[in-house]
Every structure is written in C-alpha cells, then in structure tokens.
Length: 374
Image (cartoon, rainbow, N blue to C red):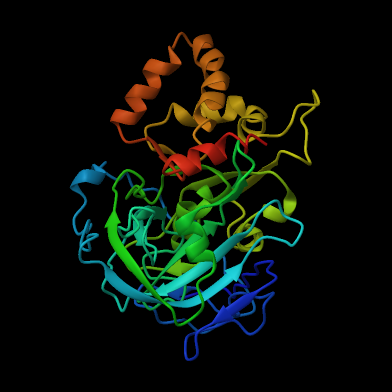
C-alpha cells in the first residue's frame, strides 16, 4: 500500500490540547507529519516519495439514494439526553488581522457518535437563558471525516466562527453557543446531540464529480469529504473522480484550512481543483468584487458541461444568498441549450445531485448575515 506524507498547517494565534490527547508539535503545524490513514485508524508507514499508479478502469456505479444508505445513524442523542464529550483541542485558525475569529475544535466521543461525512451535531451550551431555561441547541456541520482528526473514530471536530456584533441600538451582542465553543478549554465537558442529517452525505460513486461551494465556516462538511478522499485509505472506498472546491471568504487571513487543501492538490493534482474567492482583496476583469459566483463565472461553460452529466454532484454550505448568484450564471447558459435552468435544477435536486445546507441558524445569525455581504 503506497503512502503519502501529509503536513497540515493552520495559521493560529492560540492553541491548546488536553493532556494525553494526540496533539500537534507546534502551533503552526496543527497536525503532525503523518501518512495516509486507514479506515481502521492505523497509520501506514510514512514515505517521502509519492507513488503514482495507473488509473483504474472506471466502473459504473448504480445510484443509491442517500435516504437508503445502510448504517447511517441519526438522532442517537437528543436534547433531553445528550452525550457528554470532552474538549481535546481548541485552536484559532484565522489570522490576527482577520475580521472575526474562527476556531477549530476537537471533542472526544469514545466512538459513541457514529457520524458520516456531511452530517451535523448539536451542541447545548452551558447555562440558562433569560427565561431561566437551559439554552437551546445549535447545529454545526461536522468538520472531520468519520474516523476523526486523530484517525481512531473516537473524536468529532467543528469549525466555529465567534459571533459578536453591534445591534441597531448600539449594544454589543454575543452569540451564546459560538462564544461558548470558542472559549472552551481543553478538558471541559460539552453536551452533544445527534448526529443528524442525510442531505449532505457524500455520493457512493467513487468516480463522481463533486463540486463544493462554501463560504466561511461552510467549509466544514467539505473538509470532511476531502479528508476521506485524499488523506485516508479505506478498504471500501477509493476516490477516482474529480473534486472541485470553491471557497469564498472576505480576506486571505480567513482562508480556512488553506495548507491542507494545497497539500491535497500536491497529492492528487488531476483529481482535486481549488479556487478561492477573496471578496475584499480580489476583483474580476470588470473590477467587480470576487464572490463565489464571480469566480464560478470564469468557468461557467466547463461547469455547465459537468452539470449535464448524471454523476456530477453539487454541494453548497454557507451564507444563504450564495445560490441566487449561481442561478444568475446558469440561467443564460442553460437557455443556450434550450433548457430552463430552474426546472433543470429541480431535476438535479430530485436526483440528489444538488444539495445545500446553511450554516446560519437562529435570529442572531440571520442578523449577522446582513452584515457579512462581503
């Protein structure tokens, strides 16, 4: 079995890990140099060279509805009886000059939360609300593959942006759950519910084209996909298709997991494409701010050809306004082929080839969205 040494670095100003947990050697290198991980959590012998095998003949894989996939667990833990995990690591992954803080955190599960890539968990923050009742849970997309960041199937990871804003009355408002999570110290308990969701599960077809569109912390489910595709080895899964990630952020200091993704490009340059849209720093040829839809417009003909195939899957996660910008691109392209894009998109959704999730939950988060247009 060929192995590839990976180095995954996260820019961080703070990092902490609970004693005894697998941990990075330095703040700048979040994960140690390790080889591809197998699905049973055993790390293969690292190698300094990469072996390239001849591509295997593509095998047609029958489509299976995500609703029919065997073994997907949902709602094992509910708000009245949550699982109590422990924070193993919590590190800031945005630069000091970033507009806001985003943190990557790892919780212990002891294998009791059997999640899949694309699912979410709920977190119940400590304390009580203004009515004297326990805080309600908030859902977060899982940012780790099913075997977790440490490769032992005993952890789950999240990517969380600290929510702090000034309301219309001039008062500083802090999101309850995001601040609870970003302030967690290693060793602290955290109440977890779930896992939940099947909408964002990966397709079973290892030859599929998977187009991922994420803004900010909407990168979380795609990190879980990509780790499985490029950093792990599985007896029952080897990705031979094309993964294409579009990530939209306001500044380069908020490009989450950038070095991980660039390492993936080195590992599989023919199977992984990566495009950033940095709205406050980049413009297109017309001088317009570079949003995800602006970047996608540069590849619109190629994307449209991919969307005509029955094994292309689109996943979106992030701010809710993203999809309209994509529709604006595709309407004219589809019309050239005599196709009504909105009707065609309905067909894609029915075939589970068009999938979306929002990272915004609750009234406070919707208020934030109004202030995050760039």
